[in-house]
Amino acid sequence: METTGCGTAIVTPFQADGSIDEGALRALVNWQINAGIDFLVACGSTGEAATLDDEEWLRTVRIVVEAAGGRVPVWAGCTHNSTRTLLHNARLLKQIRGVDAVLSANPYYNKPTQEGQFQHFLALARELDPIPVTLYNVPGRTAANLEPETVLRLAEAAPNIQAIKEASGKVPQIAQLVHLLPRGFKVFSGDDNLALASIGVGAHGLISVAANEAPLEVGRMIRAALRNNWVEARELERRWGKLFEANFWESNPSPVKTVLNLMGRCSDSVRLPLVPPLAATRARLERLAGELGLLKHVPPPDGPAEVF
Image (cartoon, rainbow, N blue to C red; front, side, top):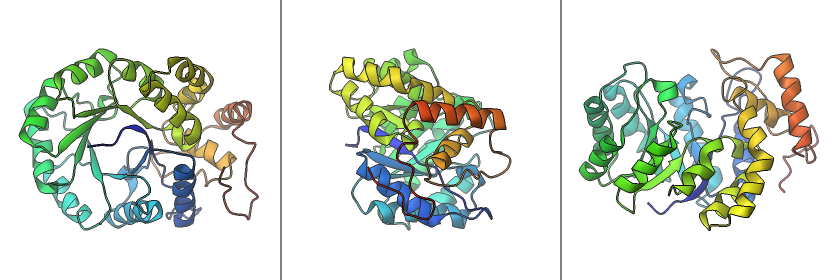
């Protein structure tokens, strides 16, 4: 896998009636690409994939692929806690041309052992071969940690398992992955606030939430770190770190959708069991967005989203 840098785990915009806002999604994709983002991840946790039915999930991936038009790589989320269902979904996903990689998180709720996770991800990789697979270790959401030794086993057993999004929150674990895995295997931070620390120990980039709101700035931060320009990278982190935290003041992606709504990019609608942030949280988000200058380029209510 050649992809490095900053990827956006893009939100899935909804209309007032709860349906997918295809126009807003296409506009977001174009804005992200024009802002210099390195790749896009459709239907991850920030994309509320867990609340999309199969038809909506596939349609969302298709829209992102079509809107990207080959300008940047597009990864598609494909996660389930039933391996049988996961393989069924993988077969559906293979029908979409233009997906550059598949991102799959640990099986949630079941709390599988390392051997269970090994067999689960190996089955997925074999079903998708030769499409590259990126493992997604996010124990805070799934209650299962994917140990570095298991990642190594998977990389050795399936050549198309080529990367991991590591969101354990443990920099030593990220360092262990970098040291243990072959040089061609890519390690991405799954936490905005640990991105620079992760790159410092050898990670290859970030899959970001905050890049939804500030693709230009977060992308610059990551690329600066990757070329060892730590002065610029730290200055950008110092400014934008407040946003990294704010996006998790309430359950993701409610805060990021609120900020995007304030920016005129899409509605703030989320699907149950998620709910919009409390009024007090929304006020804090609006104040912070204003301080960061995110509201300076709000497009007119009936006009197209401005690209800048």
